[in-house]
Image 1 (cartoon, helix red, strand yellow):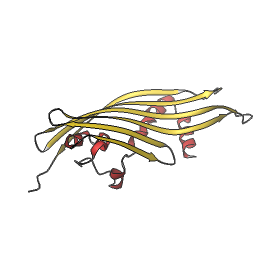
Image 2: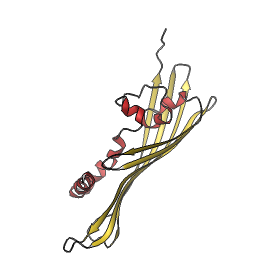
Image 3: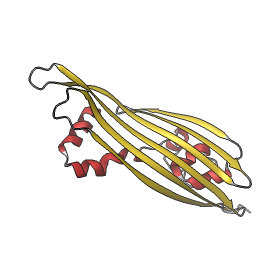
Image 4: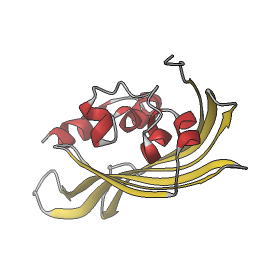
Length: 182
């Protein structure tokens, strides 16, 4: 139901407004630990591959290779993220991720007869690459390049249902400073 309302709100907006609001899925928090801590993890140096989402600089402290699969299921969508990170004392840490938000399929029907005429699919994708390195023993810096794709399409005899497809890029920069405890 909520997905239908979201879909209808998108159709009711001018096309430029829909484009401006299409990336809202990127604001949904990711990672069970981070969500459990109230999203207060940007300074956490032990995030692992979740750092790609919160603060890429935390990848610099990663002690070993890590592969992680993150899954989220809400009333609106199912989300899956696959991440891989490889740390090196000499080169820093490289990481990559693929993220899919699947809003499911909906049946398109003829407004007059209610006859099924097609299938509506709505998917969001993100591919990301990160690099992080320590700068001395207390400072780390990192960056993440993100390529985001939004796809809304209908297969079948869809008539007035528009096909919406868009993509954009983003660059996130992060830094961390480890405060001395003594």
